[in-house]
Length: 444
Image 1 (cartoon, rainbow, N blue to C red):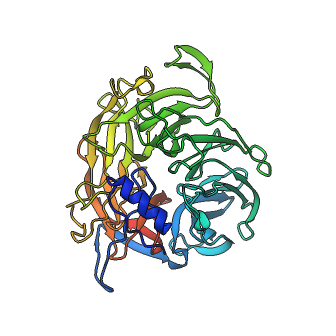
Image 2 (cartoon, rainbow, N blue to C red):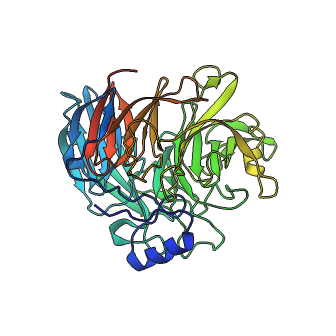
């Protein structure tokens, strides 16, 4: 385990200088990711309400992300982390997954939001430039393509260097990958605030082809900046989160481009803007949006009193707890005309905030910890489950998005909750210290 000790996202110059001297990664709202670990006394109790812990996989310590793959009657979980890749069979007992295969890559970083191709049985691991002792200034980044058609014998099919490498996301049914982040390398343009997106063609997984031209430029009021992650909704709109907000794109089919004012064909290399933009600074002062979710159907689960909503996480660490990043809920109303692409410092466009929720001061929180930033979340029906690092995993009722209500929580004293996932009635939590926690919501 690394010791995450950099706290303030405001002292960028000091952070950069310190990192250069120590080779440690920075705090996440912009330069890099991950907070300081809260100090706890051995045996100190945590806090649990309306949640039952039904299992734990301590051998997955260092876990960062996970995904699920169907194999006929078999149900397999792929876990990525600082160890590489581990595959667990959930078929017989989902509360006690059985380790069946692994690909050892000690020192891998960071593989956040690892994606899988459920048809071709492929796993895509993103290599951050800080992997294997590297750094954001000169380190190597890229993508590993792993064949898991036989879970017991994962095989690396290929590796390709990519100018970005913090996260890699499937586009157009995993025929292409969009890779973004972290902070810019020394050989990238000086006026960039972070790495945008590079597109990789993985139709032939043994021979990935990286486009030399990046996309999703000028995202932060006209400035090219850090793209952190991409999530694709049920209508195949790709939502890109990073510094400067959340913007959605069509990546296939013919659509009207509101920026160019004409109909054109969308591709992975030339996506068509759909909606989105910056999140109001009153909700997310750092402007660094870590990840997002769009319900995808305005007439059904996406609708709330006529509003099309986007949920997003601000990842930000400042001194103390109260100012750390929160869950934000914004209306996309007024952003369908390309407003988010036309925004400038002089004439900024911001989505209207509908609601927010932060863990600071909430029931079940540890008042001694200043590690309170929001991180990845998942939504099932009207219950959102979210990781808050040392403050654990929180369950929120979002029936009324103006006032999310906590209904349950799971905060072990040694929590380092990074990413929770709903799966067949359970929530599987990638906890960087504890491995995988398997939870069952017991009441709402």
